[in-house]
Image 1 (cartoon, rainbow, N blue to C red):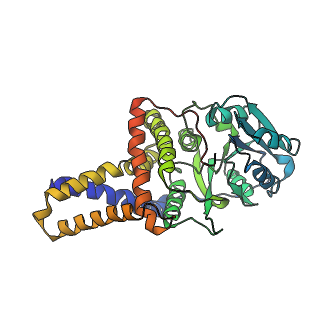
Image 2: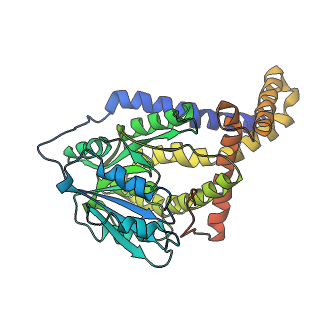
Image 3: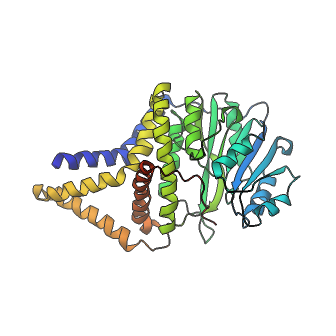
Length: 372
């Protein structure tokens, strides 16, 4: 059991510390040079799948109309995906101001809505977003500027989460994740785009299966097509901070089930395409992380079996028990660093449940947004 303990500990340390350090070292040795600007700006279509978003969709459209980008080169397609509220009516009031409305009478799911919207545009660049994500005025300009590099196929932006007091709710863990994406983008490509704000070349878009999630699948497809998927930290959108609770577990389980579907369907294709560097990043950043809870359970079980092996094992067990106790004690706090252990366990539990759901054949083609 001692070897089990050390292997589990090594895997966890590598996933959260060793991998970032390896990225830092490799980025210094072989990072790609960023190319921005250019002679002309590409045409852009922003795309939104909306289901019962009457509370925010007008604000989202006004945010679009206020963006710093040549108006003749940018429009906005909103798909009302079976909305039963006033979403379509509100959007209809803006139609003609570079805003187009498509209506799906039944709720077919976000992916079907995106496929339909993309089929209605011939713009050079597609920008994907969410209804409650408000872009900084220069966000699209900064996304589009990265496509001056002909090797870039996808550009992921950066979300800032705003708390109830109006202050930024983006904590250390989110900054850590953003830094990982920035490093990955300088090497073999970001492993997962920010679904609230990312852009890709229209020529690289391929219709997706209903059970696929676009922000995870698109970087994989772009990399397999021989293009770069990069991070642009200066392209910022802002949205309300996530609430962590029982409802969040359900949401994350749906995301993780769809993520496992993509992993198992795309791994053979990545191997065939010879994307070894990206495969290493995918395993280290995603797959190994998603197995955190089973590794932690094995670590705890092994620790209990070898408790008499020395003071280190006693301290290790004490540290683990303190972490779980903190997760339980602060499970109902309103965010902040004290809730981090609970959030950590909740999100990694969703990865395990998602894997079980995948093997059971669950697909989650349609769902209700958190705000609904």
